[in-house]
Figure 1 (cartoon, rainbow, N blue to C red):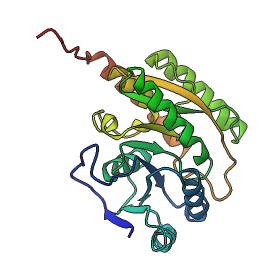
Figure 2 (cartoon, rainbow, N blue to C red):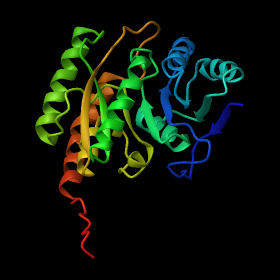
Figure 3 (cartoon, rainbow, N blue to C red):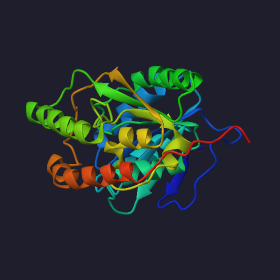
Length: 260
């Protein structure tokens, strides 16, 4: 039976529970009703051979997204529904989804259907391989090598990525890609704030971790328009950059002395 959770969540779960899935796919949505069924179907196909759950966080939608999710959840036991009473933004929805998750690993992707869930298995393999080599924590970041967006949006992202990369030195070409994969516990240990999803590479590096960018597919939006506006992001972008730069400089990664 699917789970329905009413946000906010005040408690988090341990990294592993008996019978918990290997991976939880967290999808934040705001007024994306037509894009919900095909994306859930694509996630289910992509992870058919992996123990998984799909967590949709409805960020205060005013369309029929809740009804669409309820109808699918009645037939799909891997679907978990979480609903915000009012919109908190994409980062708030991601944080809520990670807290609700039971999987050891988290994959995030945008709810507009432009990210391809078929890329998740390879990203999971990359994370496991990096951890086996001793890296911790690990963030696998999608890099949209062939973006299906307007020219203005692509150029805006190039400029933003260049400025962010110069200031934060996170070595990541495309932090705006919604497709990312990481351990749930590693994410929960990061500082949380609005727009955190755009600064995960810098925050993982700040925690002493490693970021690996992998090429991923990108599709044109089939229905609707973006509900997390470009101009809204630009207005707060400089403040966010300054804040994350401050966080970087106010922390030293503890090194445990093994010779005790």
